[in-house]
Image 1 (cartoon, rainbow, N blue to C red):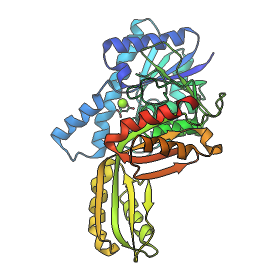
Image 2 (tube, rainbow, N blue to C red; image 1 turned 90 degrees about the vertical axis):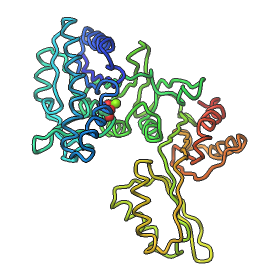
Image 3 (cartoon, protein in one colour; image 1 turned 90 degrees about the horizontal axis):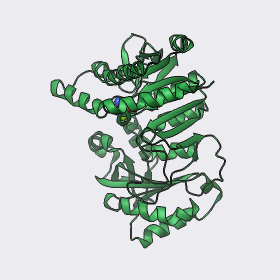
Image 4 (cartoon, protein in one colour; image 1 turned 180 degrees about the vertical axis):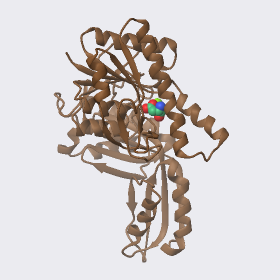
Length: 403
Ligand code: ASP
Ligand code: MG
């Protein structure tokens, strides 16, 4: 007998029919003799709708009250699913995050998991029950409800799988696995049977929207067997694990991320400590920086460019403008219509020429590269947003024989 954790995303439980469909998937797994723990997201756009509703009443509502509100979305899903499973005649119980023992810190809206006390959960499993848990939420030391941040239900699922030492953690979603590129952009994108944690982590961070990157990080740390599968099609999904049995691919996937903005500070003095001061200031405002490019000093000045997510653009510009004089910079400009296109593959590590091939393909398509960043297993380029889809297609075609 195995212990299986199954997570169902918002689209998978969006309406009555889909909740009933999930009830079938869960009970099929249970009928095979497995213990089953299920994590659910809020139905469809519920979380967005709740955020909108809150803004109508008070755009500056406290984060504590926001978490109180947002946690209800997952609670609707969990109880409806439990009812659907009861109707099919199986023993089931739904638990909120706190009932299931999910303890977090007090960072409302982006809480970190401290520990999971699984006694209650295990007692229910011992009674032979299917246990449904509300995703994305926990409780802090003040007994107040917290949430883990958008997309947090994936992390909930992996965290429970890790603490219960589950045999498998299945993430059910509206796509049937991880593809070499977004199939909506690239018609001949291929579904991967397997992918390594590191590759999945890069893909998830670089804009592939199948798994939340925090959940992949946690799966890697605790060696949780992950599988991404479809709740609509009964086909094998993609397995995410430490070592993949297939050969290390040069390129495992091509991604695009539109959530980037470039900021450039022009005419900074070419002297030590400037970058330190600028990035400390941004760090104090909790603004994450991605790609950084500094020009060579010329005539005593240099330029510094870097990228942030769109959500941080305004805050970054305002703190930089306030301090431009003290940095002795000349001007600041920005571009929020850019995209980051990346190729990811563990085989890159031991192969030269991948970057050259990528840049050649972009050159032939007349796509201008603004910035470049690399790691051992990925190469990202920053390009004009209007070129992004074309770049994904061109790069997928270029590396397809190797995929
Ligand atoms: N409902 C939450 C959200 O939309 C959590 C999740 O779906 O993972 O962000
Ligand atoms: Mg969601």
